[in-house]
Amino acid sequence: MDDFLEKKDIDESGENTEASVIQPEVNGDINETATEIPQAENNESEAYEAVSSTDTETEYKEDPYKTEPPQSPFGAYGYAAPQNTINYTDVRPISDYRPMSRGLKLFALIMAAVIMLTGASAAGYFLGKNSVKSGTKHSVSVNLAAKPADTDEMTPAQVYENVKESVVGIVVYNSAGNGAQASGVFYTDDGYIVTNDHIYAEVPAAKFKIYTDDGKEYDAKYVAGDQVSDLAVLKIDAKGFKAAEFGDSEQIVFGENVAAVGRPSDATDASSITKGIISSTGRRVRTTTNYSAKLIQTDSAINPGSSGGALVNMYGQVIGITSSKLAGNEYDAVGYAIPTKTVKRIVEELISKGKVVSRAKLGITYTAINSVTAEINDYDYVGLLVASVSEDSDLYGKVNAGDVITHINDIEVTSDDIVLDIIEDSSAGDSIKVTVITKAGSEKTFDAVLKANTSESSYSTKIESNNNQDGSQGSDSSGGGTFNFPFGE
Image: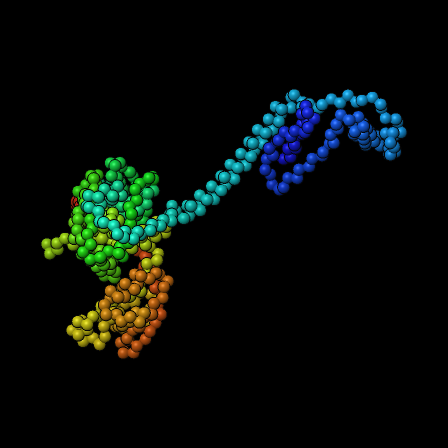
């Protein structure tokens, strides 16, 4: 492409004025060259010298047969200088040049725009390509607020007003007619909602309708879920929601007043509130044969449909996500909530990674031996009696079935809670020290690297053809209450 040159105009005052021409950006550097023409003032001698010198040089260059002009004070070729004053006429812009200049400018602008759009399209293509590879995952981080110091507790009415906009109702449904209802809590103001993983366990290819406190209805997408923690994340494609203030569950105490806020009766209705206390700050509850969760126990009523709702302290801070209750005639007012310490870790990994990757495991199955079982069964040691070691465990080939783990990190294992607490406070890739007594009676110590304890979600994309043939599937529209987490019927 030819370079666009600068056009210099001379205004009526005799001074140079530059008509700027935008040059399109091309590959390589553009070297701009401009020749300055000396400007003559109205002084006769200076005007004469300027014109004489210019004319002479031009004439010499155009006619190669002329000899080089002698350097004479009388001018070129010895002729005497003219005595009259030169009538100098100002050079004015050509009247029909400006439209051409505008056209060039417009052309340059169009070319620049085309280049910019082409570059932006290319960048968008590669960025889009990368975004497809990484999915729609984002990085989210929510700080757990400390309990306010020297501040009076709110009344239940004030707690409800503070939290109600952050709690939503969830209707779970699919094309086969299966359905459930549950609750959720806004984790961020741009539409991330935390709830329970079990709410869609019986609704394959689930879809989600979200009902907010102002009566509006939104569609939500499934982001990720985790069976082990019973946590899941949904997402509304909108902004401006009131995210809950999440408090530090490590600061709760026995007997502390709390309230549960959720949608137990109907997800489309306003949230309700029940009041109670913290019955236990960390009750370890077994959810499967190889995993247990440390949950907050409360006597606040957690009714069907409240799963995924908020357990709130009397400062308006969410300290747990309600998950279940013990059901049956032998239980009375025993409900559980997932502490925010666990919620933060799991939810933020589900959003950023699509699954849990940092949670650790040792990779064994065992029978816990405490002092009572040791005495009854005539065991010589307390600890964990190893039943099996998985092939992906760092203890595979080192520890065998029948060995007893007596110490972890030099701490005596008087109950399996000690081991589970250590592992839960660790991350995949961390190393712990394991001391065992073999079946032969010898003591050995190993350094074991903890493996990642990943988990599948209860979410399924496939609808089985016989899902609802017997009428049992999807008959529970509660979405909460009596589930197999932790001991539901």
